[in-house]
Length: 112
Image 1 (cartoon, helix red, strand yellow):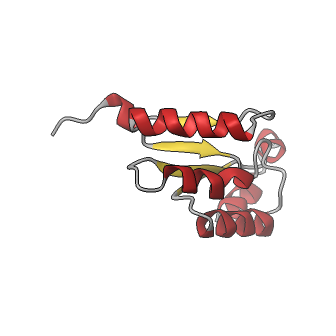
Image 2: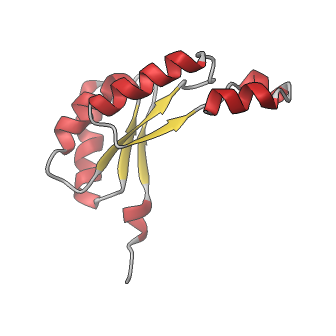
């Protein structure tokens, strides 16, 4: 079975100044190319899911973005809401400061 390289790509639409029109254009490009997912910030999940409905392109989002500074219960809540709104994949950012401090117990608890 042959897989197109494009079908493995997550198209990131994460720029801090991304407008609704840029979201629409990015989702349309993703739909045309049939990438794997469009990765958006949590507040754009519902809109991206609507724009991509009926296409093979999924919606992914980022949790605790960009520095992982949310506490684990908030990351869990952010994940639940994103999934309810149509996210099919999530990328969670671990607490960068705890990684740099080598506090691996904290990092593990954060992930679990």
